[in-house]
Image 1 (cartoon, rainbow, N blue to C red):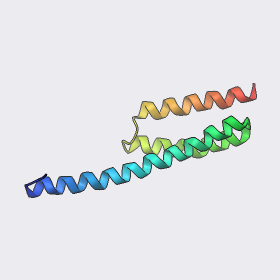
Image 2 (image 1 turned 120 degrees about the vertical axis):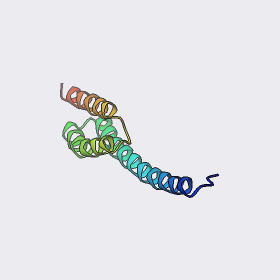
Image 3 (image 1 turned 90 degrees about the horizontal axis):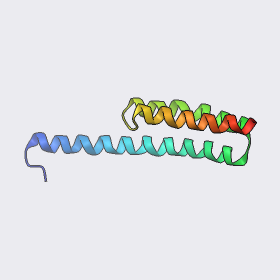
Image 4 (image 1 turned 90 degrees about the vertical axis):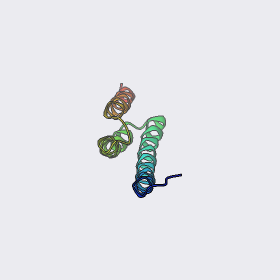
Length: 88
């Protein structure tokens, strides 16, 4: 356990940041789940609308460090390709 005042403060900051990151990660996963469900249903317009809502949320999480920016870009790219394939 932390003994010095600075270590105690650091522990508090880490706990606060962890809680924020946890909610951001959960929120992104919810958005991604709605996109996945729309793709599974086969509705291209619904899926593209869900992706339009999910993309800014995913990039916001990437900019705050919850996800790596390349991971977020990869997820968006792959979902976009799957949605595009629905129409073909």
